[in-house]
Image (cartoon, rainbow, N blue to C red; front, side, top):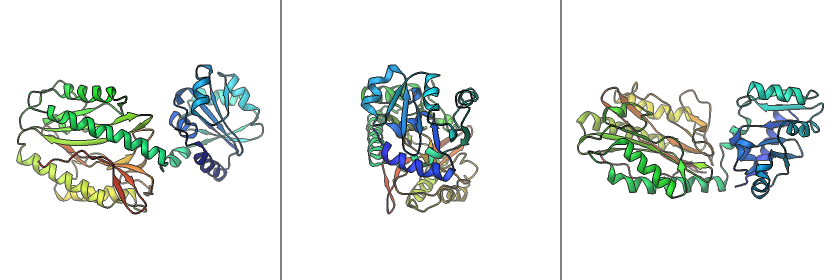
Length: 353
């Protein structure tokens, strides 16, 4: 999936605003976003005002040619740096300070002595927040698969089943469909539901438990993300109260999604509702995040965020409440911000508890 043309033009405008003549791109997700190259861990990109070159090695000669419309230079370091140096004499060259290692920076200084190196942060990540039509289709496909698998596995969530077996069944079905896990599957039942990242354990599910299942599909380079909390038997009155409070907060935050809304304001909507139910301190994380090439990317939906929603963003809304030694609830949907509001991409039912 090559989204390079539009992104490169956006990036060049951003580079001009940052006062750099070139940008050395080393962060894998950003390499893929600019090139379409599906082995970005082994690729770099040099972007200038009039050229963009994908650097990779001879293992990927055919793959790079098939996947990317950018010119390619096939070499390993230090030849890579020497080739790039020809374009950089006397130039201000930006590098991704939030990814490049100290050793990597030392290499650039050694091989580009005539360039002025400029540390930049988050430039391409900001551009990636707005998804292309192809990216939205890819995320939608990943979420559709996750919904399908969740529906197939939901009947297995019964008293006597182990958390680990539920997670294994989800993973197996995703892999059979040609996908992988977007992240380690969370299956947290009963008191373990109080752990927001309670990865599946050997615990046996009991009658009356709530089970939090957080899962995502990784398909064709893109991710989905969804959480459902389900009941086995009849949960306690307290956990039913918590579930319905979280559901109220989630639905209220979703209803407020539209272009121009501050991410921090969405977090406040959900947090205020949970606080009104006496669960403000039990909401121990932010409201959500962007999803795409990475399962956690911008925008950040937290109280301190300065991000503003725009059409084309794909975000999660995922309030939760966690009571130590008692249990927890999280409900999460995946949304596309549209021109006039939102579209919910996750379709697995939210149960009545």
